[in-house]
Length: 489
Length: 96
Image 1 (tube, each protein chain N blue to C red):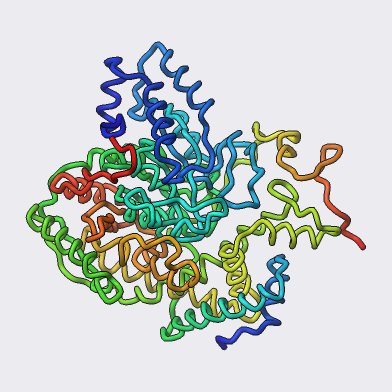
Image 2: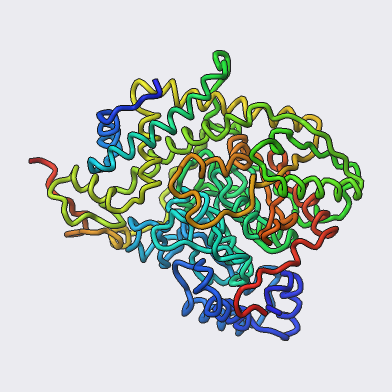
């Protein structure tokens, strides 16, 4: 039994009654990391001294806290800027970025709630990848079977939660980077509506698609964590100024009359039979709870991956221009003039996938090709978004698999970018449309690997996702199963 | 149109400020060619009368008052620089 098997509510109750201290919670994290992170390899940087000091400080605090997140151990994806704590984006380019000058808005918000930052979590370099194999440091492993990838790019964020090294974590999702690893690692992961969470201090990959979101072991705790990070931020000009509901109000088991749409494209060829069966079983559960479902079509789904790679790579090529070897990061020792300094620093600092995407994006934006590739992809994006709008005229939520298959083996797809990209075929359309998407555990493969159910909602309707997810979680036991890591309790 | 030449790859690398080896040019030509060929799939769609989406929400340009406030000071801003001198970033010579 780990302290992280409790819910946030239960933990706060125990803290109030002085059955446990914040220091106990923080020690739980570091002890567990000591025990299993040699296998899981989720962490790039630990914040142990500062975290233990913070825990002590919180334990001495006289007045009791109202925050449900008080003292709870948190892991952060390493593309979230943390003041004074090394932030690398899993890139060699930022291997010496030891002293970031400010906190990302989400990091600041969670510090204000008195969470305790345990460390920074591994990812695919600059969030480009679906397996964590593009980390320039090491590959995080799937806690359910360490021969398998944890997914990506927020692989460390999902693995650390599944392995109970932290209570919860934040990741970022540009084309599935929260939902896909959440599915592979059997945890709950939400990509909020574009604009709901401030991106200030998130190292940008593709600015029109990126969103930060919570990864947790239960739906209820996911709602609590989301609540703490949402809201308008004047430091992010794309941050939406909308009324924020109380997400936990949505946590009812009542889904009677809920209208579910199931896109036929999401159950077609390429989706493994056992994944399809798990989704169909989940739909049966919803039926038994009084919801109804019908098959619908998102006819432009098959164009999403191509449009996504053109758009996200184009945006990335512009965003990553800031890594010039002047203000931060690594500078090549070999450069004798300014132009060589740019070129050599970037070539030495970036990994293959990052270079490939910068090249693709630069090509798609270059004179003579802009209309044929970049603008074309933007138009296709409109068609994809219209598909979702149309379905949401008649339905409350879209349900399907998060990924076509469960986790694959480390090394299995690394040599073929296109096969790797195809893994995100069911998550990418959601980012293109800007709607919220969530992955929750819905079963296991014959090899014992988790399968994720994806729930997709209307813009800013996270509440309906939480309601649907909570009802399913209460009616099933999938989330209660635990990975059998060495030294498991 | 889906063909991409080695010369184009070198040109794009220059635009992207990447130094790439001949070996990388070879590999990149193949891989980018494959990805671009795959992207030709989009040409199946008639998008003549479709508006491009740059942004999913109907956001307008956002302005705030231009008031000075506490932020990062000069010393801190130089803290992570690979090379600095006299309170400024230092770089190799720009002119030959």
